[in-house]
Length: 155
Image (tube, rainbow, N blue to C red; front, top):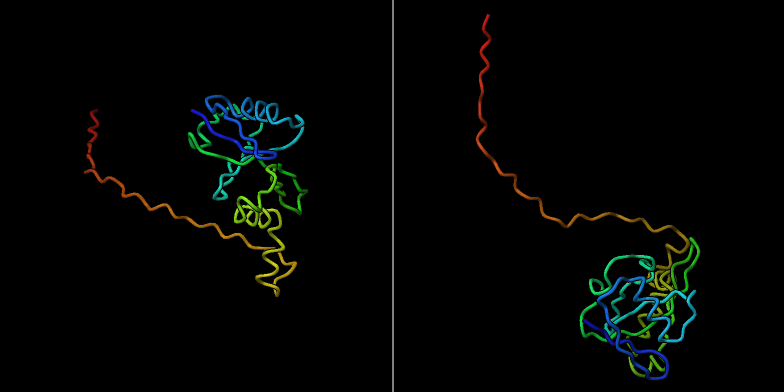
């Protein structure tokens, strides 16, 4: 099981995903010449984020997070404080030239409040309300006839 990771000036490397996430990230940083303290992640060409940055110390298997023989692009994650979200910076040069849709998507992900403000200027600065949705169908309970038991008391 392997994936291809694109980075730098058109470089690509093949990585084995049959390992723990912590080891995969360490190998990724080492082979791509990144600082060990950097926070990195991967995104595919459609904009689907792998979310490695949320599982940096995980013993979970990396192959459960990625599709086998798939190509990903290396990105830097700049973690924001409590009021700001994460910012995503591509580590592949000329991303806008090769994947313009992906470059736009990363900009939107990096500035989610800016996009919301443009869409709905009357709610600027107001906290967004999260409403949980439950899309799981209710399962039917198996009905079985009740057994009746009688207890006889003897004196």
